[in-house]
Image 1 (cartoon, rainbow, N blue to C red):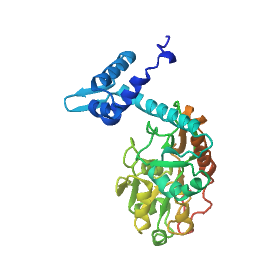
Image 2: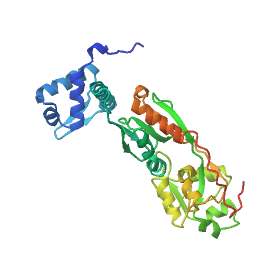
Image 3: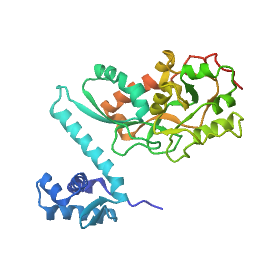
Image 4: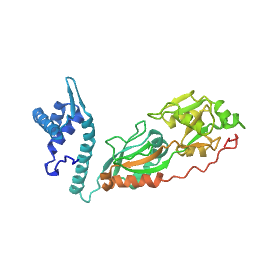
Length: 321
């Protein structure tokens, strides 16, 4: 079936600017004031765009204006396109002068706090012309629509984005050294039964998904893993465990410093791969953008193909492997 495409020569730029303005301000009146045009002219532009696309872009209610699903799909593309036009025109107008560019970057909270934020100064030192607008939404899956570069915690997926696997996650049981010492000599099943279980919530998965899969893979049926605390991030779970209570299944690569300093230990060698990994994603059209290319290369150099932490399990308990 042949697609119904729009000829680039007839792209309605004024209508797209009007659509972006209404979506940004959530109001035809406010958008008209911002764009310095009449509200009736603005409405005509939006209506013309809806006729061109054949779908409604806004839900118009007496006291609310919201984007439809089609509008939500269109808005990020419009914003990115106008941003890049603006950057390119500024570069041309100011050729030879240093231009400041802001990248909107998405990272999971634990990845950002444990790994990226502490070393962002290194990127800024070498690329001072690029500012970073960092967002850290909770959850897994595809990135937000309005970001330039994203690190996402996800399973492999086929999308229109350019995706680079930074590393596959292998969850490992971590705890406070005092907890490991208190249960010296116990096998894995007895160790789990004797301690409070700390869970990390994964969107669209059961609350106890990781622990349930872990004990099943380790051949430990019958263990009660539907107990304990549930945290939204691995960082919160690790912070609780470092207080001297509980055991958590987390990615040890996020906590290399804590392991090296002995604030956390690995009492067993057992690991668990549930198919998730940290992926660097970029829109294909962004690969030609100098600022995006710089930041993407820096991330891959810093985090791509990271080695498994070299610290062995502590000799405090007997593994059942």
